[in-house]
Length: 89
Ligand code: SF4
Image (cartoon, rainbow, N blue to C red):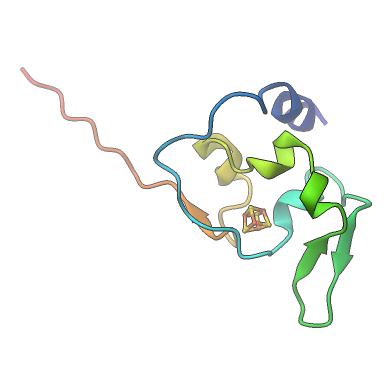
């Protein structure tokens, strides 16, 4: 429940500019930490949000950060490339 509360309070922060890809409708983020009452299963096997056009910012921006994406990365259509930092000596 703590991640959900944190996600709600940080939802007005900007989306990480390194995010690539797009939502594939897997619905995994709609089950964190429990299944959203607005999530509807479709005959094609995908899921759809019943309030998609008026969904709140924490849903609209998900995954806003790499940390959020880590919780759904197996099926999520978004990606966060590894960023390698080289230290100069
Ligand atoms: S986990 Fe990613 S691909 Fe799946 S519904 Fe959420 S944003 Fe879309």
